[in-house]
Length: 266
Image (cartoon, one colour):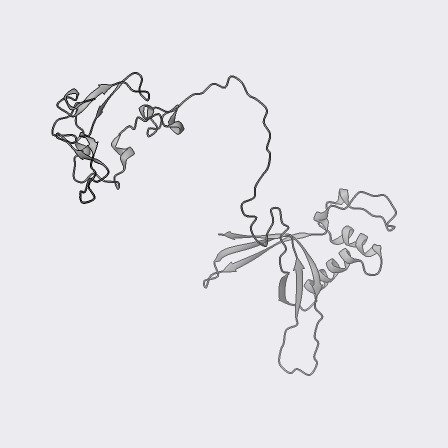
């Protein structure tokens, strides 16, 4: 191509291996030979030749955005309803998308499929000090409480602790299920011998749920901590002292184990 082939816009319609159907493009005009002068700014390249690059006229209608002073990379191009057509650039990753910058619904039809294999799986980073499906463990829930005058609350915890542990005999476990457990009556066993075949005791009969409510300075509930599958693990003794002249309330401490807890904002 020589300079007389381009039009007044410095462009021409040509066919090439990349564009066999032809495409109109603008061209930068340069000399035929390279400059061989170390002192020249164009040493090793070709000197620009008039009319150089795109001038004051264009083959297509000019978009004001292209020459506006405020046009820069900070603009939200999708909001300007501009479409980037990449088909003619023959870019592999956009081979089947003619308008890659536009949200376009494309329907594809799968004609055939073939079986493949996974040769290997690389773990880039396995993390540290944890595994998927780890079993979480929590510290015990420790409750200190005032023992009432008849020791009712203390005795209830004592029966619960003895019932699930039966330190003397299995009869303690049977009595706990029959009298204290929340297990429905229809599923409670009444055997006194561990060898007897009776209905299984649901775990619900041994465990319970507990809720700890946190109050505001005006005694309004703020947060609930809900513990699941709670059961007593230890119960402190009672400290009696007949030498005290002032009124002192008996207190006790009970440690509970549980499966999990949830924090609920009210």
